[in-house]
Amino acid sequence: MLAVKVPKGEAEAVRRKLLELGVLARGYAPERRGDFVLFPVTGPVEGFELVEAEFRKLMRRPKSYREVVDVPAEVRPLLPSSFDVIGDIAIIELPGELKPYGRAVGKAILKAHRHVRAVFAKGGRIEGEYRVRELIHLAGRKGTETIHRENGIRLKLDVARVYFSPRLATERMRVFRKARPGEVVFDMFAGVGPYSILLARKARLVFACDINPWAVRYLEENVRLNKVNNVVPILGDVRKVAGKVKADRVVMNLPKFADRFLREAMLSVKPGGVVHYYGFSPEEDLFSEHEAKIKAVARELGLAVEFLDERKVRPYAPRQFNIAIDFMVEGSPSGP
Ligand SMILES: C[S@@+](CC[C@H](N)C(=O)[O-])C[C@H]1O[C@@H](n2cnc3c(N)ncnc32)[C@H](O)[C@@H]1O
Image (tube, rainbow, N blue to C red; front, side, top):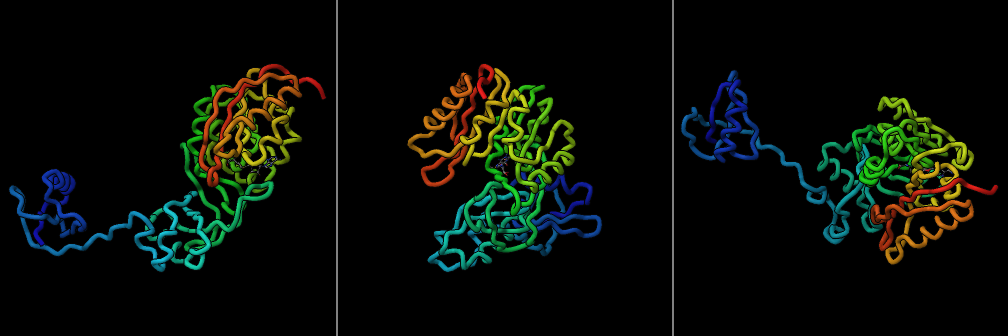
């Protein structure tokens, strides 16, 4: 094949020039010959030394694992178009018909995604107090510990032992943008610290509570990893901590049960402070039921609430959404 031969020192500039001229042959790796580099070209180019040479074909990475997966044609339409990636671990939800082909799916994901080193399938629903789910190994490394990067922080975690969703990164950044420098923050359900560590970059102090010992172990490690010195990890039931902390901002990221902890949240927020409440809702009534619960607890405590913002965070199940409500609490709690 025809090639342009250039001294090594000029290679990068010439490569750009050939690209600009539209004559660089795509899909081949340039060849080194002593102090020269050879670039494959689609035709003669004036002003350069031309030679004949053989080139290695570059392997194109598939755009999707679905291009390379080896499964029968009848189940192909069921292949999920996306999956979560936490650090270097991919977690995919496979419909029942695809379960016998889990290994093939796992191998295809490894082939298509250079940064993925392990693939697991969701083995069930997120369950229990710790909000974790069973995982089934499909391909690659078997270990479940990884380091995930989001919003400029690093989070070490074990995907089999703690809750973590990469789909909340934008929501966490939204809360970070609302926070004001110097605040005291109370992250009631902190997990491995994705809110706490991010907010620690603005806040004076962050109290980060979780009942799962594995989550708190990773939270402590993440505090060190990210060199923040204003996070106070607390292992235990948030019911024992609430009221002892007085915060400008409270984060309640436990959408399944957050309504059961509204009293604790309101006892822990300063007058004029803000609560970030999360819940699950059906499409036809996203906010009013949650609002009613918030108002009822405020009334019991002799407090007033002002709703500041309400949003869908992400779809959660068919016709179900993870929602967020930000509200401000006025007054001081009364009664027992
Ligand atoms: C949905 S996860 C959220 C974790 C973290 N905020 C995140 O964004 O990744 C909820 C967390 O609340 C913790 N949790 C559940 N009940 C709790 C309680 N009563 N007190 C403290 N933490 C609790 C679970 O262990 C879990 O880590």
